[in-house]
Length: 339
Ligand code: PEP
Ligand code: MN
Image 1 (cartoon, rainbow, N blue to C red):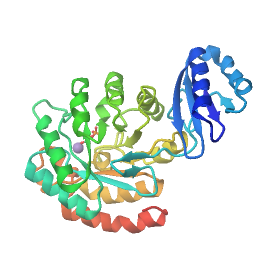
Image 2 (image 1 turned 120 degrees about the vertical axis):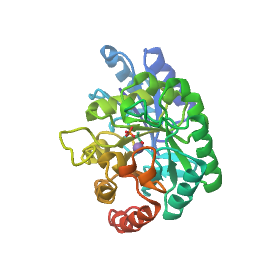
Image 3 (image 1 turned 30 degrees about the horizontal axis):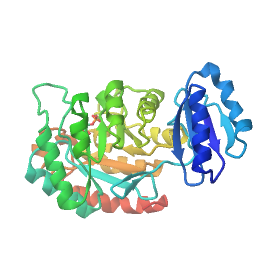
């Protein structure tokens, strides 16, 4: 159920309503918008009727009580009609500016990471990506530098001011990754690892939730619901392609996910054209499409020497190609009224 508050409600009145919601057996989740506050109340659907009494009980506070018909509640647009924005070290995701997250697939060395960080920053990226824990298909492939990689990411942040997004692979590492990361990435292979989602949510860090290789949009939204229902309001979805019969591309980037997520949810949507195509030559076209669809951010793999990358070489852009992409993308970003 969604409880919509009237504007300018006092703290005392708000507390009284929340107490009543809890007394009736629901868990309230407060979402503060610019104009007004709404509360998502999660509880037994069979007792929904009793919450409707809030309107008569608190006429000065509660404007309306609405059921959310969808299976996903807190991530839904119904729960929070305005777009949510996530502020990461002053970088706003979900606002007017399309944020560019760029960097290597894997953190490989200090020289590789710092060089890439400087290059992507100079080209206009605001967030540095880089995997320290890598979910590799084969156990014989490079698995990432672990905490040493996280330390290098922290060093790159100190030197460039870029924020950091990096993947969390295991519940055991939740605290460690949260200590270094500004945004925690949950990878496609873990999109429905619910215990991992709960552990990530509980760190309080913003979560970038990739779509699974064969995850339906409703399942993806419900996976996001695990983040919000565990007390973390800072969630962004990231479409990175799904597995289809097509072999020209590594994955089929589902750009229709952008308007669908925008319609169904208030959370920002990020597009990853690198995993999404698996081909460096397609990344720019996918970026243009993503911008046209209304994506809030792009997650792009950049490596100083893609041919020698320890992971995902075929889809990573060299710094020069990335700088060209950024210049070529600019008029597309302006054409959709964004920065
Ligand atoms: C990545 O970002 O390098 C990655 C492994 O992504 P995904 O989980 O989308 O495959
Ligand atoms: Mn990758």
